[in-house]
Image 1 (cartoon, rainbow, N blue to C red):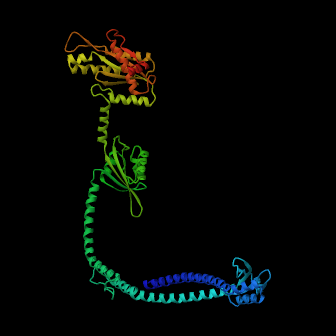
Image 2: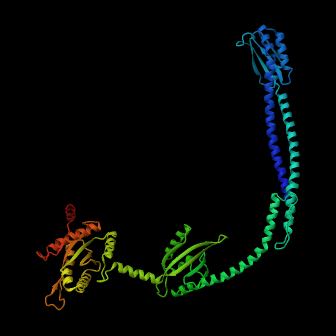
Image 3: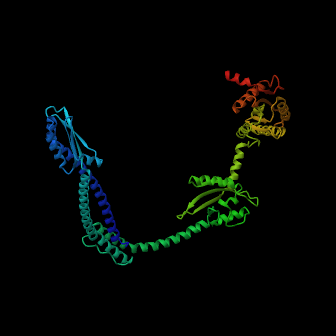
Length: 530
């Protein structure tokens, strides 16, 4: 019941039935409509036949001619009744019967035989619809039966041809293929008359495929041996890799891990176990940040990476570079591959480099780069502070006369005094060369004067270079600008302090005690105009 021949035959019969039914119905309706249209046309032709007689009867008012015309119309099977009516003449036949059948008449105007534009009477013709419809149905039904018979003959012939040309050869090929054992010398014979057909091509291709089966079996065995060899090598690489690698389920269960992962877990003093929570969250100091970073990347179908600190039980500070990627099996099961590279040494080196970038290597206080960061930080947090720009007087002479070692000694001393004499919340910065900056948490000039006075007293220490008896004394000139009272822009604030410091430096000989000048907001405006 499920064979190819049965299904194909059933399909052909069903297709033929659908086509026949659809076509028959179509031709039935077309024939029916044509017959109705033809009947109406015949009625018009019948009227044209008697129209001359009706025209003369109406003109002469001759009742006999009128009867002859009407009787001639009603003799046709397609006309049930008819009547002629004018001002002086009226004759009808079977009109009452037509009215009882609710038959609508067709009206024709009777023209004057000599003046065609003049209408003398009208003829009403009542079609015999029962007869017309019966005839239309009969002709349509006869045509449908003829079409059914023709379709049946065509279908049987098509089925017969299809079976002997296509189905029977394919069944023989299928049986032969079913009986063949792969790897043997058995082959399929090409059916008669199909050496150049699609069936013959199929048989030849199948025989070629069977020729290669044994070769493929041999290659498969060889490939299996190679895969086993590579699997051993990959397992060796995985287990002995320096990077800790883990394969885990979506729930957090570790399916596979290498020795490096075990060593890393033991290094932070955590117990080795098969589950450390989702995405190894228990091993990290900030598990919520880990999950947020990884899930954001996974949502974009990307692998995730980042640097995170491990939660250490034995106080070992371990930083790792985490690389994670989702893996989905053919069954739709989800896994995660996580690789953890120990970057603690590199992290420490980067921290040291960061310190070197922000602190002056000679004096140990903030350099200009670090100072600008601190100023920006204070501004972003909305702190009010005073920026004091300090320039050393006499420092160039020390460098020129006594050398750079002496100059370095002065810079180190000044830096120590700045750092020791200011409060804990204040900051000392070596701005460059012999220029320094103090960031004082003060909003009024009095507090700034007190702080600067302490620094000034500490710096005015006499230096004796190269065992000379004449001391060298270093002084300073200071310009101060307030944030945010004078400006909220860092460059403008520094420029205001620089202008004030320059004024103090100009007064160092005439008024050595006026070493401290406070900037005025309008000083910037004057400078811009100049």
